[in-house]
Image 1 (cartoon, protein in one colour):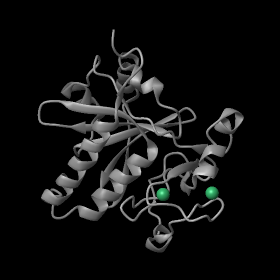
Image 2 (spheres, helix red, strand yellow):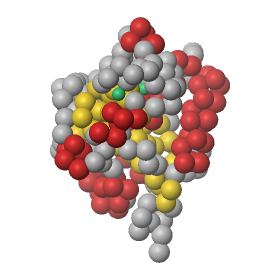
Image 3 (cartoon, rainbow, N blue to C red):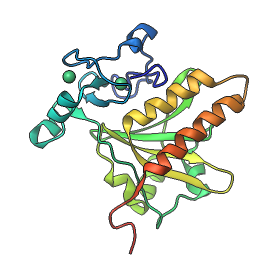
Length: 215
Ligand SMILES: [Zn+2]
Ligand SMILES: [Zn+2]
C-alpha cells in the first residue's frame, strides 16, 4: 500500500477499532507474500485470520481469486465497483446510520456487520442500529452483493443526496488514510474535503450498475 493508503489492519477481534500500521511498514512497496517488488498500483489480499490487508503482486493476487482459495484464509480483494441507480439512498437512510461525519463504510465479516467512519485518529467503529440495518439491507440489494471481508458498502452524505457504492475494502483504507493525512482544525478543512472529493470522483468513474439494478 502507498503511504496515502495509510492504514493496514482492520478489526482484530470482532468489535475492536481499526488499527494503524507503522510508517516504516507502509514504506514497503513489495508483495507481502513473496517479497517481489510491486508497482504503485497493485492488488491486495485480506488475511481473514489476522484481519489485515496485504499488498500482493499479480501472481499472488491471482492465487486467491478462484475456486476454493476464495473461501480460505487469504482472499483477494475484488476490483469491482457497483452502484444501484434504481434504489438511491435517502437522507433519512443516512440519518438512520447515525454517523457524525460525512462518510462511512459498512463491512461484514462472518455474521458480524460493523460500520466505520474515518476520523483524524483513524477508522472509528460505530454501532449500527440492527433494526435499521436489517430494513436498509432488505431494500438495497447492493448490500447483499458485497462479499464478506473483502468488499464494503461506502456512503457519502452530500448536500441533498447520499452516494452509496459497493467498493473493494482497500478503497476504505485509502479513505481513512486520506482523512488522517489531510485533516486539519475542527472541521477537517478544505484540503481534506478536496481529497475526499477526488477519491469519490474516481469511485464514481469506475462504478458499474448493479446487475438487476436496471429494468
Ligand atoms: Zn498496498
Ligand atoms: Zn507475490
